Picture 1: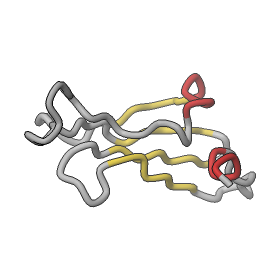
Picture 2: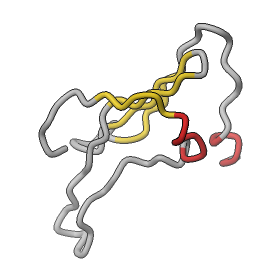
Picture 3: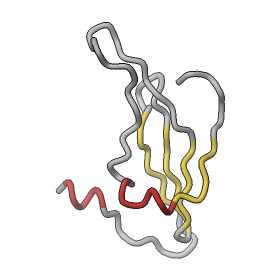
Picture 4: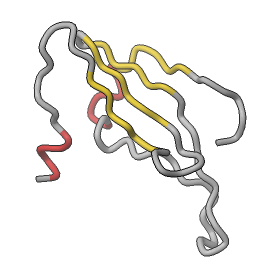
Amino acid sequence: MRESLRTPPALQPDTLRVIPLGGHGDIGRNMSSYEINGELMFIDCGVLFPSEEQPGVDLILPGLHLVEDRLDEVKALVLTHGHED
């Protein structure tokens, strides 16, 4: 089943696909992928700071596993704000 999540179905022309990659339900780690007509764009690329129960962890990054095979196809990264998350 995991493999089917990594390869989403082909999109019809002019159809937008949004994939949340992190931060949904957290404060921090915000990142989303938007795809339309073969163009891939990321919105934000935040980090999450670990809790005290996670010693030795410096940062928690968004999960790119759903798009890791397509990182060379990213056309843009849009940053919506400049604070640390």
